[in-house]
Image (cartoon, rainbow, N blue to C red; front, top):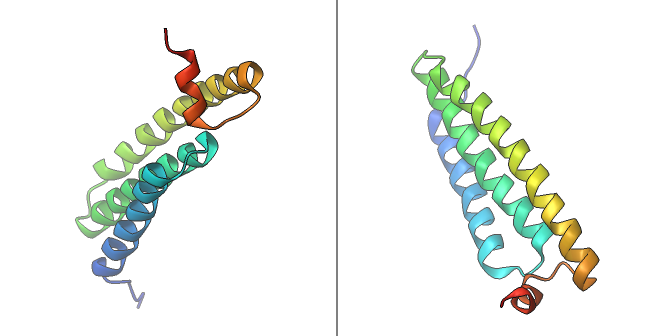
Length: 103
């Protein structure tokens, strides 16, 4: 008999990961860390989708996870391209320096 982990544990873990991600986005000024925190929040949502789809014996949550991972990969590619161009122009990845790029 396979012993399963209660759904509450997944809820608490996902809430903790999502909170860490939100705090990182709000309080950090480094763009790379902000992207990492956004990915952490997306992974917390993915964890919940997989946990609930397993709990409900429905595979649609896992299909959503696949699409979220594809969108996250595209977001990282575009975001890192923007960061590289920002670093080339300002020699920093601090988001406060982006105010210089305003008209």
